[in-house]
Picture (cartoon, rainbow, N blue to C red):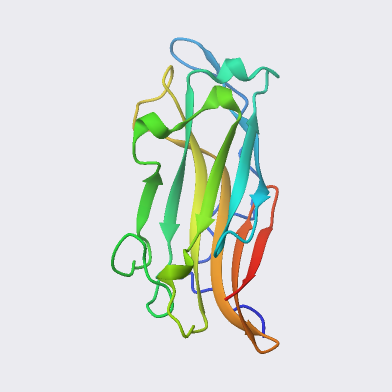
Length: 196
């Protein structure tokens, strides 16, 4: 049997995970000319991470020099579908309802620096947070990687570089229970398939 159909309640948004990444390269601002991060893509660093995967996230500067992105920080914005118990426990508390959102990491000191050109991103639903015996189900997270420029943007203003859809599934295949993590978007799909 294949993973269950999506439980995400709405169709992908314009500019969603199947859309091309945003490709703004140059913006003239009030005080300077800014070069924005471009070509964000993800690749698998490690799969089968006890119900998840670790992704490499890389971006470029249109100048060819990452130092031109020194005024930028990169974060992720997440919107969850409903997470049901069973089978999925929520690491952060009671089951989430559709439309719950958050920006990660929450603390500014942990935001990725644009000039780094790289960050790593965990996508996991820890095994200990799943019911046993398992129940077939799935949930999705709509994810965007967003940037903020301290030279030309208000501190609470963000612009998306790329969009992804992350899907966590529990299902039976050839009589065995499986857990699948899938990240769909630029550089993907990234897939980790594990025995339950």
